[in-house]
Length: 117
Image (cartoon, rainbow, N blue to C red):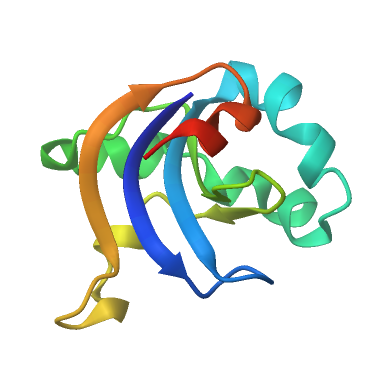
């Protein structure tokens, strides 16, 4: 997995905290994310909608990889919000997008997010 963007003091979580927009290859999603999302009916019903393949192929300038999921994950790792691949880039933000670029950081477990600055 790789953290690509940060949303400081993200208000989408139960407790406001930093959120990371992460890229997770489809072949890793089951092992790393499924235990947390397995109870989320929205994720189960729309899992294919969240896969980046079509959007990444038609928007190569964004640098998104095909066959990946993009998720908003709380810094403490307790909450994961599945997002469509264009979430940080969509027009819904008008002139204010809360996401900020960071140096991409790879990690193996959700728990490693706690150590990121």
